[in-house]
Length: 177
Image (cartoon, rainbow, N blue to C red; front, side):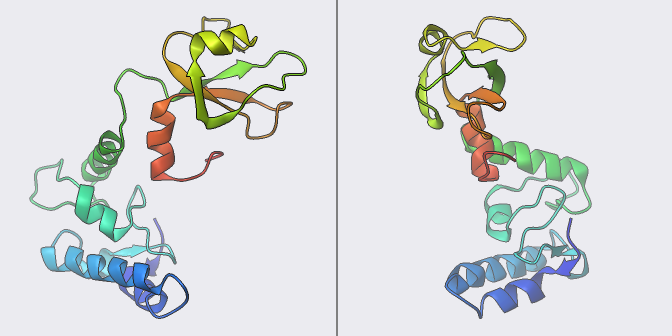
């Protein structure tokens, strides 16, 4: 969860570099969290860059999306697993998560595949099937749209990723996370 005092880290970052104004806003949000009584100042620790809690929210994200799922009147993603998980679920919901839709699944590419790829390059599952992609577990690709993600290139593992992957990506902008 990080061990650095958040106010100190954000104060430093608010004074340095090209992103100082962004971190100034995050510092103000952290102070609001303390003032609101959601997380005590001595428990508000995180990464050097300001993410905190069990699911690593930035303070401004916390103010927008954190929820009190345990019913104690505070939104505490540091010491309350229900609040942390509920807040993360709320984040994913607001980011477009569709219940019942998988984030994606692993596929096998045809030998020497050279077609389109990229998580944003979505096509119908029938289009991917026509290009020779199959699920590694042998099941049908299904319905809907997906993009082809090949994080290690076409010779490594490949995945068809749905719009739910985009919701996860908005939480942590890494294709290999």
